[in-house]
Structure formats: structure tokens, C-alpha cells
Figure (cartoon, rainbow, N blue to C red):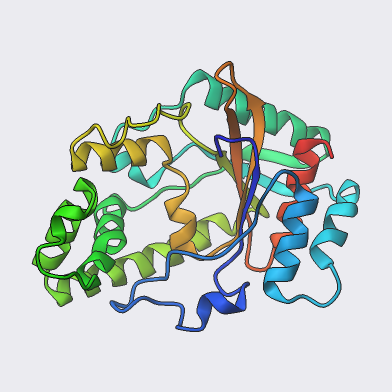
Length: 274
């Protein structure tokens, strides 16, 4: 999101190879990662997406080429993050400007923009952290090699190992419920629009210079709108909107419904003016 490229996160199951081992992890939590294209423009992203899913023809690219015909969508804009219960989420002036610019561009395409009325369970942050780090307990390391792990990885692995399987499974069940809630709330709109990042990218080394907990906190504060999409299993796309004095980008995220990757590519095309 900070480097000026388009990133399409397909919905869980859109890429066949992503679900060969199921849609849940070993503790029953929703699988949080999928494969998707990163590209300089939406046409390239669509081509790779079509290839990755083994689509007949080029439906993604065709969607991009017909983007001008898309209008009239109900789009809910939101700056609410599920991490707000745990961390102070604050948008920079640049992040707000990118969101405002995206709203204006989409309204110019005759979409109906409104403030999205969404709320998140205050237990989300703790449950997500548990699930996100649970897999570290499955790492098989040779004796004496733990010190080779990065400090954050080592610390969170130790915490994961200290939890019971029941605790891991309870957090996984919580995330499944939260995913249902998010899909229900977002489903009131054709698309949900959020900021991409909360502020400009920290300098190289900023994360690793911190303690593990401070490192993780900075990650959540910098990118407070993406984990929830992974939990939901829905498709999303991030689009660069502004180029900052640093040379990096500030963009927005669009969250769609199941199977709406083509529509998201169209909206991204409209935002990029291509």
C-alpha cells in the first residue's frame, strides 16, 4: 500500500490452491492468508488473477476494460477499526486526504457514498493476536536454534507454546463469530471503503528497534484495516491515491462481497483513472 502498486486480495477459495488443505487452520480458526496479485496497474493485476485461478478466457481483464460502465454502487466509507479497543488508532492528514480524494472520485463516477455504520467486538484484538500467533507453536525447531528467531517471533512463539490447545481453539471460534458479524455488517453495502494505512510508512528498522510488544502494536496502528478482511474471507483491493513528499504512496482499501473481485478491479480502475 505504501509503494504505489495495486494489491488484490481474492476471497478465500477464489484461488483453488489456497484451499487444498481446507479453509481453517489446525485450531479451527479461519485461514488468514490467500494468494493474490501485486501489480503496477489493474490490467496486470487482472491478468495474473485470471491465471492464478485458472479462469477460462480473461474475465478479470474484461472487467477492467469495461470499468467505465460501472456506476450506482452503494459504498459505505468507514474509518472504524477493530483494533481501537486495544490501541489508539489515529489517521494522519495524508491518510484522511487519500480517503477524501477516493470518495470524491467515486462520487464522480455516480456511486452513492455514505458513512458506513459498522462496529467491532472489543474482544477482536485479543482473539486475532492469539490466532495470528498460534501457528508459531507448530514450528519444529532444532534444539538450540530458538535464538536465531527474530525477537517478535521468538517472544510470540513462547506465548503460543504456553497456551493450551483449548485456548487456541476458543480464540479460533471467536474469530469465526467475528467473521460472521463483519460479513453481515459490511453486506449492507455493495462495497466498503476504508483507509489503506493510518500514516506514512515507518523508516526501515523502526519495527525491529522496538520490543516485541511495541513492534506488534506499531504494526496494528499502522495497518489497522487489513486483518479484519483476512478474517472475513472476503475479497479486497488496495489502490494508491496520493504520492507523498517521501515518494511513497497513500491509498485506500475497498472490501467487496463474495465473488466480487472483478467489480473491485473495476473500481480500482476508476480510482486510478486508467
